[in-house]
Length: 126
Image (cartoon, rainbow, N blue to C red; front, top):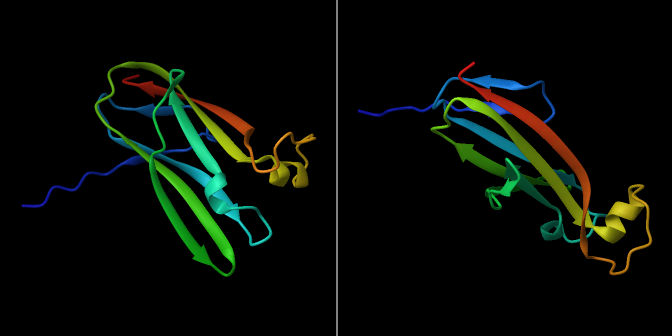
């Protein structure tokens, strides 16, 4: 017998998410890069739950039509009733961030810097 688990997708850019107690969900965010960007591995994404970093997640990287897609995937299960804050942090090499409009100068060209932060509320068991 095969048991299938459906994961609700939580996007940091959406309205607050409402989930059932223990309902499994995932978060997936990242970057779409072209060949003019710096080294792809320097474009990262970090996720925090209630201010605590939950690691790198599972990296899914694909390439098509000259674009590199770097998606960082996080899976969660078993959350208790409550209201939780997720914080996503997008990091990029400073020199690429400046090319995209981030204020410089860069002390170290390829040093990763935080270029975007997004917070999201997850309401469990409402």
